[in-house]
Length: 281
Image 1: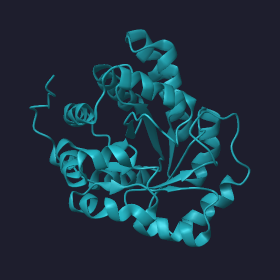
Image 2 (image 1 turned 90 degrees about the vertical axis):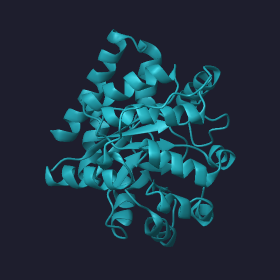
Image 3 (image 1 turned 180 degrees about the vertical axis):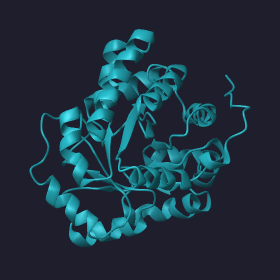
Image 4 (image 1 turned 60 degrees about the vertical axis):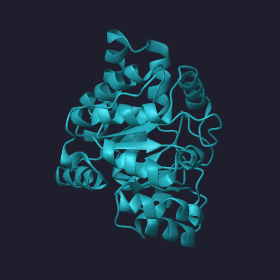
């Protein structure tokens, strides 16, 4: 089956890492924080994902993170692992996800970030992937299994095609390592709120404030916090300590329960709206 790309001209301001910077700058000027919403692309289908993304954006998500399903997702907990398996069974491919981005780009001003593992990029071809990603409107890239020591594999092509590489910084990172990671980051720095994999948690780490303060000392880039954030109360607790929060498993879990019909998407919008209100209150 051939992959269909959008014939609608892409807005110039929707291309490249500049849209991420512009989004965070605008939110800062407004005294707001970024809500970054994650969804697994292709779960339950790419057509459904298109509707989901537009619903998330319309409900107040400032940045959309699209997870590329992978057979061995080391950084993901059970909820996203199961979503990845459903997406792969549905026939989701990297080429299909790039086509999805090309359809989404003219429909939303929200930056679109891909979260993937390094093998799909290498198999597709690094230069080919970055070139196509920029062409369809991808703004940033998260590769959780690629340590900064190996960024040489992708960094040059990413910079050439203005795709922001968004590194993960863990609470266990030393001061020197945090400094090294932040020096290579573009767009924003993704701070992992706890050790382990993605997934909903009942509480936040007691050391989160100290960790975020250490990161803030060595970078002027926006700081976003993810992994384990799933409730408006957690969002409200974190908002004074960062520039954005990432919510993923809670959204993916809710979608699995309520489906992607009109009623299900309305429930997802209500949930995202509650997160937005917690950030803005």
